[in-house]
Image 1 (spheres, rainbow, N blue to C red):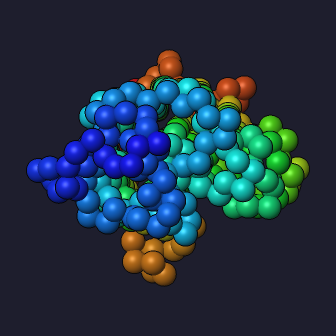
Image 2 (image 1 turned 45 degrees about the horizontal axis):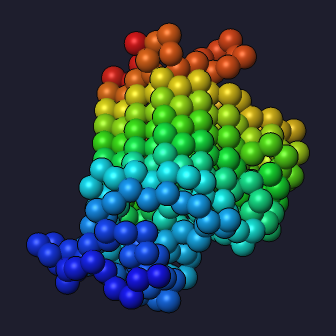
Amino acid sequence: MAKTFEKGNGTLSDPYVIASPEQFKYFAEQVKLGEDFESEYISLKTDLIVAETRWEPVGNRSRRFKGFFDGNGHTISGTLLAKPDAEVFGFFGYIQSGSVSNLNMNAKIDASNIAPEFTVYIGSVAGRADADIVNCKNFGQILGPSRATRSVRVAGITGALHKAKVEDCINEGDVHGGSIVENSNHYAAGLVAMNEGTIINSHNKGKVIGASVKSGTVETGGLVACAFKVSVMKGCTNSGTVVPGKSESEVLTALLVARTNDIKPSEDGGYDVFVSCYNEEGNGVISGQDEQFLIYSCLALSKEDLKSE
């Protein structure tokens, strides 16, 4: 493992440069040790192939990445296999403030062996994002847990977006919610599983397969599973097939968003807003279901130009 970056001092004009896998390992290790890189800039100058038996994402619940990471169009490939104790899983685990931009993900994200007792967030770029994700693409398959007794959020870009934005992103990878999960609320989507932020000009082209659970709510959406509290989507499209999940309890499935605001506007001060969002006719469908819902469950919704065409 390298002992420092290739060059740079972490500023916008002179970012820390990662030019080799060894330098990336150095960067990841620094975050693991508690260096959050808040307000600092990191620039990736090489493709990376992940060949490790178990992948430890950059940042976790207790040690979050807070800098600006520019992938410069480089590609991450290989297989990212989760450790059993992973709670936030992807290339990055938990990002807070700053951003991740210009990154291509072509790696399999395999979270099938995460231990069932954790509430988990899974996405290709980041498990959970309280920071912006801009101009990132995912082409790899994403596999959710095979066991879960708590809430699961799995999606093509990030498992959860909180007071931040996903902009100009594309998912083309298939998202598999999970095959044998117990009593669990489960959310699966092409872009963001649980959205409490803003999604702009982003598109899903991959298949989204809902989880099979014994009991609990299963929400599956082509773009978003649950638009929670106040969320905004503008100029987004779905052309991927959505496969409903299974549960003895509640199953919600939609081409765009499975469920909108669970909290009334008077209680949280806002509506969910959808502007110029489309399902591309003849492409995106709900598999095996006669009724093709754009949005399944609506409680607080302001919408414009929301249609299938």
